[in-house]
Length: 590
Image 1: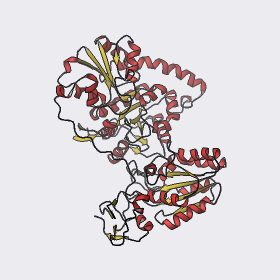
Image 2: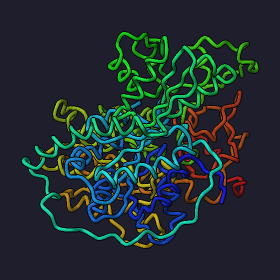
Image 3: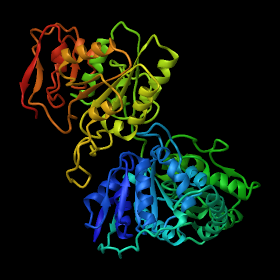
């Protein structure tokens, strides 16, 4: 049946078609929809789970592959850092069933801390990397990756990037049939990693690199297109940009599309270089293909990132490719340039409980020396003015441990560590234990909005519901903190501003590791009863609500504040700080 599928959906349907039986992962844009699609389209024989973090997810997938079933683990590029411990070992152990590690890179970056390139991880871990250039190719490539992985007994990385993940194409999706029952786990010393076995495995892996490179030179998706004098090497979505840019002028170019950047298809690379006078390389993110070609033929003139010809950061585009190749707009026959869009910095949603939590802490600590360590999630947006409540943000879970380092370096300041409920389960618990054990002094603020909001409202262990909508045990954050040794644990509704401020002040008067759990559901999950309005006769135009909160529902007029009823959800935070008591309920949300 022909369906219009997003790139991530194509990966999911390709995995189902390949007979995947265990799927794990951790949500992270731009990878999230793969696991969600498999959960939604589950024929009934696939175990699907949101693991507590990427490391756990990869280990679950590895265990399933040990038992002979095909397994898939999904994550974004920075999530691969979390999973790197088992990733660096699983190739030494090997697998029995096919195992694919799907990683979505984020050029730009659009929704990530870094522009990390997964292809380096493949080379570092000696794990073959397949690279998608389109949703159509992603659908087939994951099936190729499973077949290769199972045949060779090694894990495989399938890499994609944002534009492939979220672009769409019409695909013929076959009917799904349950796979044959696997043989199951067979006890064998090979499954236990020991230095001597790793030594022997390293020899096997090193020899396999040359073997795979030769095989990938014959792989049909590593293709040379055209016979023009100017060469263009590309991979991933850059192939689409190149083909769009040279449309109508294909006879000038020879295009080398690389679908397996590691191990690099050297023989095909040599054939490409031998057939051109000079070569351009377009790829996101790092010069991986470029470096491989330079290594093969250093005497050939290659224009890419290394010599500054191609931008080294950010996404590529058809326009960038055209500019580098010297194809101007007149030649391309394109329309006039579209006007530039105005900048739209991300902000916390109107009525977001995180705004109330930050404001309560800010108000309680006014005039005192304090440092506010942030973390990864919606609440990172608390760094923006007027809240200005995120002083540090490194990676998931680091807010708690960075706060400890700051405390040990400067004991005059009060250290705060903000972390979301999902992030706490993913990577925060270790930092709490470390803080208690090493006698740090900090206030842990857990922003519990009952979901994994930033990546699309996925469930987590504190919800009591799995991705398959099955009820499960609720893991209580307060109980975990108590088990870690904390004695000061307070639960507060952040919209009860007076109590919230008092609780923060109480915590500041204590010592050691203490925790405040601000609990209020994400506004996307639970709406308030009515929006608010401003009584213009009473409003003095002090704009305190706008200056201190920065809620996007508040509008600054020439003399008065007004409220956008289409954005306001009636949380009441602005009402609680208005010095003239001029904000009240206006009606049901539209």
